Image (cartoon, rainbow, N blue to C red):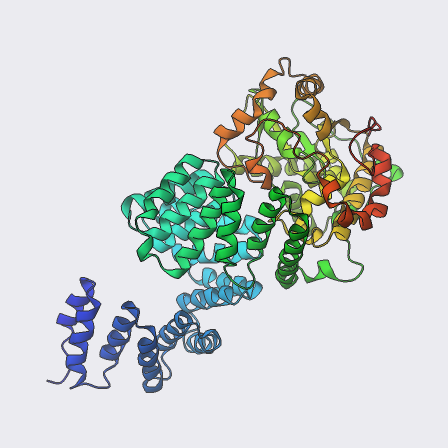
Length: 617
């Protein structure tokens, strides 16, 4: 016999019988000990049986026999990665890419390793190289989106995932990852389609069930989440350690949502973090401590959470943490009265043809206001989107900077920008053309110059809440926005960001004199009906009673893409009032920073009691 017989081996591979594959390969290796195909099949059969250490040795043997073969180096690198030898894996991937530079598979696998090492920026660059080579590959698109999402580039991830329906059906693991990514970027309906389909076709896939239960919780579908967890209960004896860890975190969240804080705390403390850099774990744990009133432990835990988060943020936005850097950069440039008067007069939509903008510093009640407005049949809202950030970035690419160069925008420019804005809106939601759009993004307050240039007659609702309650609540949040996450790194940074944002708003509100209704969270809590009526009059809604059914509307809505997704499905309550007083010892050092805004808005440094009417903006 001059060559090995691969027919019987191929039959075993087709049936997925890897033990039989190994046996048949070994039978022939006795006669052909250095045959490349036999050695490759042998290594693969070991890897598929989860005998990773043996497969590493087998692939290493192949790289020694055939040192210029990129495929062997790539397989060796992947086996090393599965074994946890990450540095050795990186070196092997470097060889794979050197010998096969046009192989997108090696690049995307290397990107996965870089993600595992938390080298997010490098992973994104490597993944984008793979995507440039093979943009039609579902696997490469999904993993590249994951790399972009890890760098908090959600718009880029969304673009990469846009053709997801064309990729189905997918392998189980890939479909699960796709579902998780779509949920992370705010497409809850698509995530449900994928995860529910995966569980239907693979009911024994414990990890898929865990991810589905987590998605149900995120979509406020708690009965379905609990039912899914019930399916897992019978399988727990066979769950891997990694799956057990993920399950524990979902069980803790469900226990917390059901009000069993002691159980949620016990589960999380017993499970521990999912890795040494799992800042989300500490944010979740701090939330439970806060609900239990354990303020000291809350602040200790949040300190750890923010330290870990900042360590990650510095990898892709290092300049944001340089000495003297603006905490929220867009609060710095301002348009003067004289500059505004020099702007050319243009034609623009009237108030009814313009969006209604809900603004205010995050955690001031903007989501509550958005859900109230969205409950009205004449209005349509959407989850937060950085549309004006995106428009500003597009203008900067053309050498037009906001707000310094807004005077350069002529009629055709503004018409085009409004078209782009509408296009982004229609990508985000199925637009109901018989309704007026509500654009809720708290920090749109710092984009007032650009908004005013495009929609000069638009109406604004400014959400206010006691500044101390605002910054405390922000400090407790795991924001996905890099701007907000960086601002929340410390209470001092947060207080400065709050004051800078408010001063920027007040300056530009004085210059442009937009139509603004200021709504205080404390007033909504005190008399939601009166505030709904006031909003109705301001927006000329006629019957404002639908605004009062916001909690029912929110429960039926599904995905709500803000940290308050668990709160807006409940009726208005007083739990959020004066919360900061329990943390006064921690807030006290930043009161001097907040003092100008406390005075301006008429808030007391002692409590919310005695709040005065806000000055007209």
